[in-house]
Amino acid sequence: MSETHRSVIIIGSGPAGYTAALYTARASLHPLLIDGGPGLGQAMQGQGGQLTITSEVENYPGFPEGIMGPDLMARMREQVARFGTEFVEEIATRVDLSQRPFTVWVRDDVYRADVLILATGASARWLGLDAEKPVWEGGLGGAGVSACATCDGPMPVFRDKELIVVGGGDTAAEEALFLTHFASHVYLVHRRDALRASQIMQKRLFENPKITVLWNKVVTEIHSVTEKRVTGVTLRDTTNGEETLRECSGVFIAIGHKPNSDLFVGQLDLDPNGYVVTHNEVRTSVRGVFACGDLQDHEYRQAITAAGSGCMAAIQAERYLAAEGAGSTPEW
Image 1: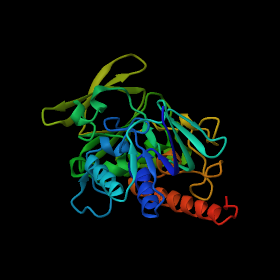
Image 2: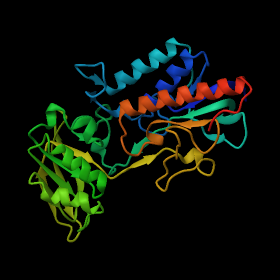
Image 3: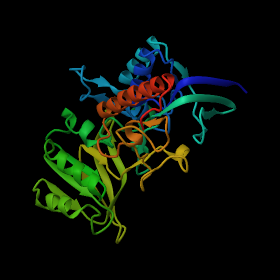
């Protein structure tokens, strides 16, 4: 067992964690980034976060031709390494936020930090179908199956095509409405005979001529051709078990996200859905602990907003440490 002390430790990577590391490293705070290691994808603390299971990213500034999600994360990681960020390619298994320095356990190793920045993200909830796996794992994730209409909907492969959205809440309604800007028609598949979405969202759905709700249906299979292109779905009627085939060119899963906050239960204030509650953008309920990215953002969930909050967390952490070093009580 080893023990290490750092001024700043960042748990998690992705755009939020990498940006926090970039700014703290350039501020000569010598951050240690516990980024989970490669191959974990969207799992909690997986290196690069959800963008590692995304195909082409077209809405991140600076890449006019787009960039593959894993490539964008690799570039970010290379950039933060250039400024001296130290990496621990493992998963944090336990934290103690009750006293400073804060303690983080990685297997049998102990890391202590004056300031913690949390960027463990959130994971999309999936249906559990093989087709939802990334393309490189034999699925269709990133090749017609997505959990983010805002990220992927404008891509040429979905334009003027019939698309499926799965879900029944506000997120599903928002995704369906957004996709009508590009699709020829959108089918909203819901397993019940009534939506959970707010009344205003339901009104917008029902009034949109490009949206049809398929009631009492669940997707049991997503079909494709050899070019890794979605061609349709099998729908099962929840009332009688009857199965039908519906042709489509894309499937968007919108049944919610789960913030990766299990490590912090009982130690930080969480909202009813498990997101870390932050004040003044990135300050948590514990002094010296900052949260950024999808771990605390249940509204936007974009790479660019995650990066922005990572920047804010880093600057706030730098100011916090500077105030302590000057002998004053940092603002909180």
